[in-house]
Length: 162
Image (cartoon, rainbow, N blue to C red; front, side, top):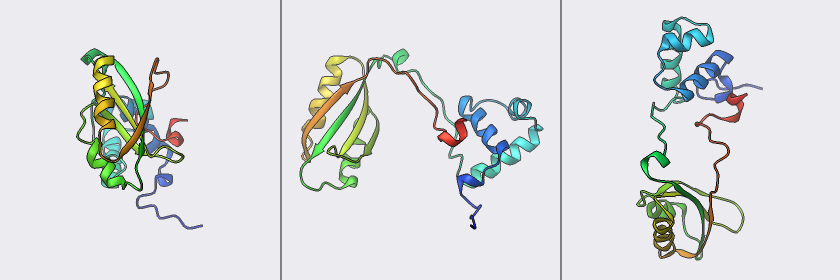
């Protein structure tokens, strides 16, 4: 079987995967610090990171915030059931307007859209749910409030997580 190694994730070698793991845990780590963990020189790590960026595997570097420390202590998953056949683009345009929306995905099953939200408190969450339910394409909603977040991972595919 022939694989195009230009952009395929399966073309990553063990060193690339180790570098990605380190970057996902601390994007501010220096190339020397990463190199010490993966047994490469800082210039070799830089070359690999540059290649990963050029291939689009690494899209950027960011900070991970603690929502609770910022006053956003309530989290919920809101299922949206839509009228008729609402396009994903229509759903996306609507939910992107909400700063409380952390993520939104079309899903299989009876639900059309799964929305993850963060709010300051229950009253704030209630207002967000009411606003989402009032969107013209929404027939009904169902909410699930998060009690405890048991696993949170950076955006690293399972194949890289070992």
